[in-house]
Amino acid sequence: MVVNEKVLEKVKKILALASNNPSEEEAQAAMLMAQRIMAENGITLAEVEGFTNEVVDVPITQPHRTRWWYKILATIIADNFRCEAYFNTINRMSRLMLIGLKQDTEVATKVFNYAVDAVRYHTAKYVEKIKRDSVNNKPLDLTGIRNDYILGFLDGLKDKFKEQVEKNNWGLILVKDNSVLKAVEKKGLQPGRKPVINFARSNNAYASGYRTGKEFETRERLTECI
Image 1 (cartoon, rainbow, N blue to C red):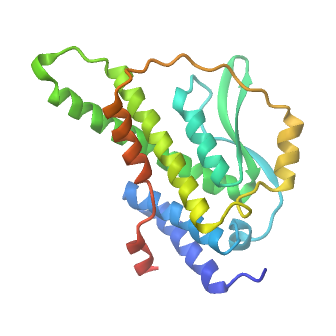
Image 2: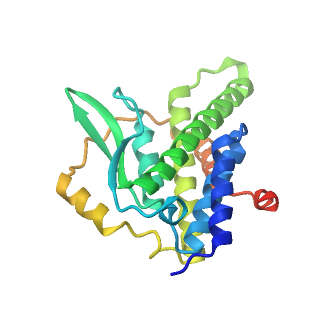
């Protein structure tokens, strides 16, 4: 497929906007917009930055205890940017990793970091609201409520990506490269232990998180200045 030069230039500008934008929300929106445009035109950053079939392993967390939701979030992002997420453990120290084509891991890493910031920000904001609205200082399971909200956010984000892929028929475009599949198979990755997570079973917290996760999307107005 011959890639339209104007499309490539637009993607470059959007990625530059994402990298240099002081607004977290607009940076997040720009990254998702880049994914949408690349998927619609059947291209990856290989066409933007020069072709490479180099498969790389990239750490996306520091070697310490990783929050329970990081792996779930990383898997959601990886699946939508042709990568695979896994844990690498050395001397009892684990790091969350992405494996994929170099250009795909670069984009996926940026989106992961933006999404982590979004989860933290919106969760803290929601918990503060819950504390303010608490009647008669009634004891609250804030850890459980926080986890309910985060789970809702992750499910909302996952469904947002799914709807976006189904609506635009991106399924085949987002299939992982054969070289990535072979590299993953060679690693012989095994499922890790499921963490024990405290949930408050708050439907309100989950629903609020879900709505916010589904709002993690592109803003059409960003294209107006590209």
